[in-house]
Length: 170
Image 1 (tube, rainbow, N blue to C red):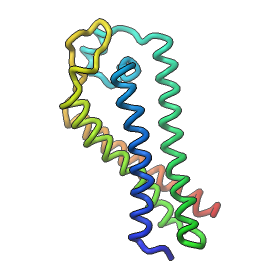
Image 2 (cartoon, rainbow, N blue to C red; image 1 turned 90 degrees about the horizontal axis):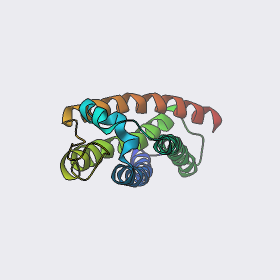
Image 3 (spheres, rainbow, N blue to C red; image 1 turned 180 degrees about the vertical axis):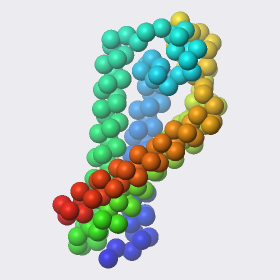
Image 4 (cartoon, helix red, strand yellow; image 1 turned 45 degrees about the vertical axis):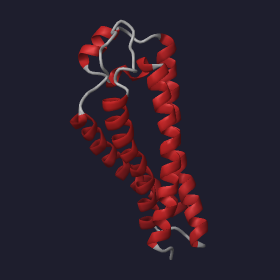
């Protein structure tokens, strides 16, 4: 049986790696191709910015697929490493908890560093949309916290599914 402290440390490490990679992708896309995030903008900004180009639509799809892929791959990699650390089969509880920790690490980084610090405070003037000069890409802290709560529910659901599959497979 793997000690909780080992499970926590291992899962936080994978969560930190996932958070670093996704943070870079998100920040770069916000700064250089903000139209792929137009659906997250306030309605008045969405209306002013106009329609999204076909190129940005493709990029949004590719970025979404990459993000989703990383959100699945990193928990699975964490579980593979956890199984080796424990020198035995993974229990459902350990697998689900590890997945939840990995995903919630990113969810927390997304809320605190990306949404509250970067989007709301440091970069709203740097995120520039066509046809909407000077309009700010901000929604307020409560909007982002609601997204965090949704992310928490999705993390829990993913932990149950991925943890369950891992416990059966390993």
